[in-house]
Amino acid sequence: MKLKILGCSGGVGGKLRTTSMLLDHDILIDAGTGVGDLSLDELARIDYVFLTHAHLDHIAFLPFMLDSVAGMRDRPLTVFATEETIAALQQHIFNWKIWPDFRQIPSLHRPCMRYEAVVEGKAVVLDGRTITPLPANHVVPAVGYYLNSGKAGLVFTGDTTSQDTFWERVNRIDNLAYLIIETAFPNSERELALQSKHLCPSMLAEELRKFRLSAEVYITHLKPDESDLTMLEITACIQGITPKRLMHGQEFEF
Image 1: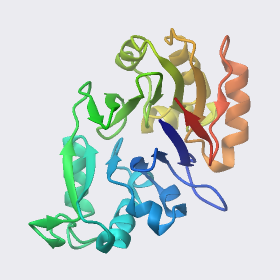
Image 2 (image 1 turned 90 degrees about the horizontal axis):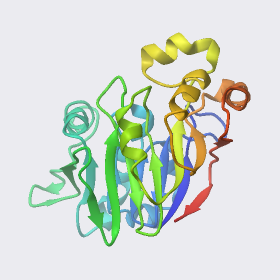
Image 3 (image 1 turned 30 degrees about the vertical axis):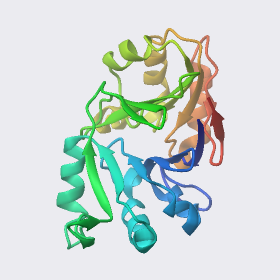
Image 4 (image 1 turned 90 degrees about the vertical axis):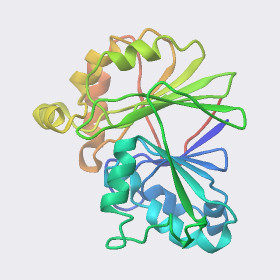
């Protein structure tokens, strides 16, 4: 399996893109603004999208992608998400007011898009690739994902704050090579991190003390104007692990 980071910023501006990752050539993990850098042919090859939650920075380019490739596909794109996320998409985005309902285009019998609900802990297997939703703790219902090639695994937390259940699940993974975890705010904005259910460096340090494995750790969702400060604070806070900044265009093979 190969995972390419299309976007990993907590905002936009210049070359910054919000959360989106391309797994092999046919699976998206979240659909933030980084999806817009793919060519039309690359967009048309995507058959599956796994969403962590319904916030705009994680779904923004799903409507545009569907509109762009609708006439190029001979089967519906499958959107995997929790029932709550699917309900939010249907009520607030694909509602014929903000954007067309692609479950009805070009017809009910030949739709461009279909939903499939995911359940925390229940794996989805696609051509030998196993993708398992993990618990997350955010202001809206959310999940992370464990991507397992069989040889090695990668975990993406999605947007989350402090919790124990996530680490209980992760620490049972016997082939974990990479952990991608969010840290949205610097320590000076700890109260905002708590209110919005994100992490700051001091909270990240508390969470990583629960981590029992030796995987490489990468930081995502840094706010653009505070990213350097936040990474400096992470370096100062974390003992025994050296987290690295996740970068646009970075690739992981596992």
